[in-house]
Image (tube, rainbow, N blue to C red):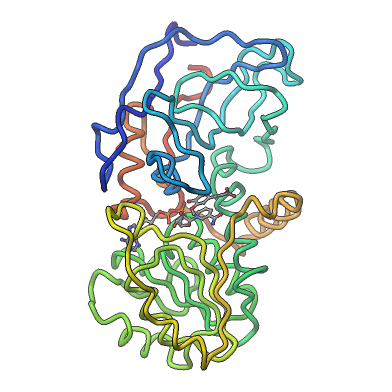
Length: 339
Ligand code: NAP
Ligand code: FER
């Protein structure tokens, strides 16, 4: 148990790309749980692309933080004081916690994690929000069929790496865009993708697709947007489905981008382009987590984590998402058991 608490706050709203100045680390007292609340010691916290949206004041699916607010997000922790909450000391829980050593939270907003089922960090990745996003985005929105060509961008990341494997299990030919040769070999050699494209090694995404997806694209799971997506749109087949999951290449843009300019093609293809939020599937989260757990246990789905050590390095872990520094789920390890 630490004597004091450390907590990251939003120091200022970023213009364009956030940097270290966006964050402020404050020392506070360890908070006291109120009635029905638990005191949770953070073990792992998740950094996610959507947090960039919360740093800006504009309208978004994600509520903006105010300057001075503690940063928050998905985290796994250990209950150290359960006064009033239905948990016991030592229980592992997942919830929306502060980027801090300790957070108090209503017991009703915490979910138990079974440490015997899988490493507890997976509750933030393959068996957590990103895994569920891949599960519903592929099965309910992109809907790959046997023999289809399925393309995913951000393919070596938390969502993309799982989405591609689920599409593969559906019998599709799977092609992934990622930002390094190391990531492409992860896709092809470890995850069983049919082809990977290192988009940083070429400007001609259309030519890369001509080679990797010679029969065109039937299902597209878009995590990044921008020029790669423009190129994929030119390869869509009749009745293709596009699942708009994320647009990370645009999250730091200071001006609203023009386009997409590839919409005329949708007339001939009658393709469906559909955005989605994982929360829309909340009533079925249990089903998704169970299925993902079975796939992980059987080895049909593999997962990777990139773990940054130390709460003080959480900003670097977050900023690294925009530079492609992570393979698989980016996490921050905040404490060890028995510390
Ligand atoms: P992630 O893919 O693990 O990390 C982000 C990755 O994006 C980086 O590793 C980087 O890989 C890639 N990237 C960064 N800048 C890029 C650029 N300019 N162009 C192309 N690729 C770029 O993150 P994640 O948590 O799995 O999220 C993936 C996407 O899904 C994000 O867009 C996120 O907002 C979205 N998402 C949506 C929902 C939903 O409910 N709709 C839920 C979760 C996540 P490279 O090395 O390949 O560049
Ligand atoms: C993301 C993570 C989560 C994201 C959106 C969400 C578009 C939203 C989830 C929800 O509210 O259901 O990176 O980017």
